[in-house]
Image (cartoon, one colour):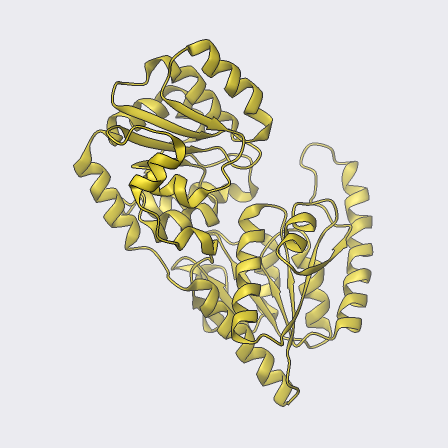
Length: 370
């Protein structure tokens, strides 16, 4: 067998796909330093910046999603799909991978489909509790399907499903004390802390709910608020207008390990990666699923926790009325916070990136021995 293995990792579009992909790559390299890893992403998407920053080579293909509002745009999307398939076949032919890994996102479809056509084994990493269309189509060709939730046999062949959980950013698992974190943000150690995460771009409903409640923040409560870059100006202006409020706001939080360590309660969207982080860290949470995602999968993600009393689910349509009122009430209820924290921690899957890397390496070695 050849000494090194070659791995293609494809997908992206959002941090929820990219950070797990990089975590898998890091775990493979940790176990096999000589492994060659190539990423395939969608041109113009976040992965084209984040992957090289993590030290990996990436090739972009001109793939994008179907438009739900403008049917005429889909003619261009279909043309891009055929071009992407052609480029993906070229990449596979030239790189000659031993295994192809798809983490979700536009680019994973053409890449894994092309790899399968060349009899290269494929591994799917499905992050959500409700499988996407692309992964459902590819699952019939997959050698392994790594999932984060139980009950995924309703989407995939049961014999290929492996419960691994979703990889999370390595820096989040580093030990940071609440005292260090509170000091880092310049907060009051005697106050209860709510962390509100609007995503890197921003979640409109979460941001508007906070803006509307700035003057209603009870005594003894403070907020760390990641508003996202699109809402940075309006959030900053609202805080200035509200006067002396206990809020630390920024467009993006670079030290999420400190933010989580400081938080008694987290408000977040219900993306797969966010939920995996909350489970692993055991954070009491209120989840506000985004309504702007395929097949409403964030609501299904949140329900997988809320039915086990591991998180509070607030529908996006109700958030403006009830989100912050619930947050202020829950964060002061130490017993409720403790129960939510203990229950969500039970759902954590540890060492996910390492376990997925073991599967990828085993499949690649098996092909090398053929």
